Image 1: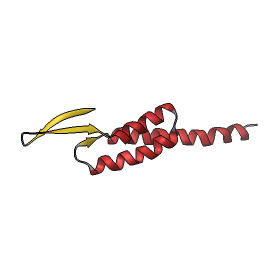
Image 2: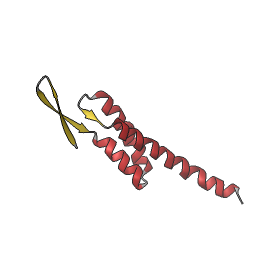
Image 3: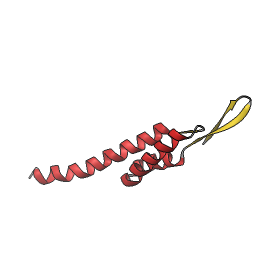
Length: 83
């Protein structure tokens, strides 16, 4: 995705970070390792680049991936100790 904005009458392309989008996609399909790794990469990359956006997408993917990991680790423990 791109959107244009102008700085001193020069057109600048603003792009959504690919790692951030991959992170959110990974989190939505249940690939939490992909979501965590690419969420962190995307967040760092967006912070260092002026004409990229997607830090919110990267954070969302990262948090959803971490939530999936926590659920994956705690649900079996709860089921084992609930006997």
